[in-house]
Image (cartoon, rainbow over all chains, first blue to last red; front, side, top):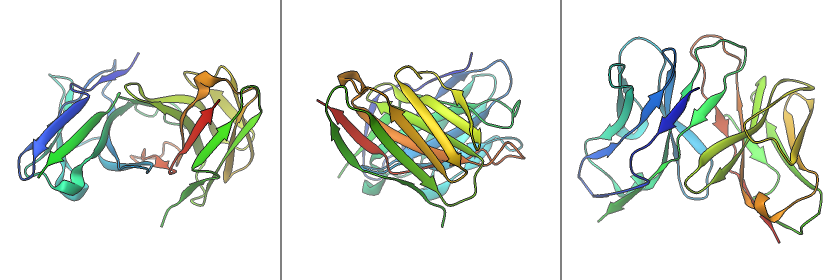
Length: 116
Length: 115
């Protein structure tokens, strides 16, 4: 069965510092991988996704993530944190299209705080 | 602009009441989902639907049912609300698995409190 772990339920960084949010997954087949962000009082929105091809994926708002098959990881990074990055971040994994509908497994989330 | 809307942002109900949560999407998506979100547990899938009148149980369907009579609308029903169903409920939609278009689009959520 697929599962997703996110190391650290809460991460604090200073404004301008590197953001690193960790995600590890377990899957019997190469999965599709996602990062979603949830700003306060809003639903989730997609930051970036890995489906195939280049393992370094760039997303919105300067975020990127690298798929490392050998480490079963998909860590999210941003070189310089901004106050507006404060939000909840969810890593997610999905099977590779065995059916016409995609069941996505979400991690528990990491709350990012940015300190001025 | 793609849009998923949920009928209420905040809802307070009493134990034993029947509760309806409505979700509407305007993207002509085949797939629709209901999740509940609890601190430290992330999102857990309650039910999903891949076509009108079709539904599949997710990971935590107990105490819930769903209805999809029209493609754009997916309703979550709490037959007899209980305090342990106090949570944030999120609706989402997506296209079928045709190519790498697995993105789910989420509504703003309904925070339900059962007293």
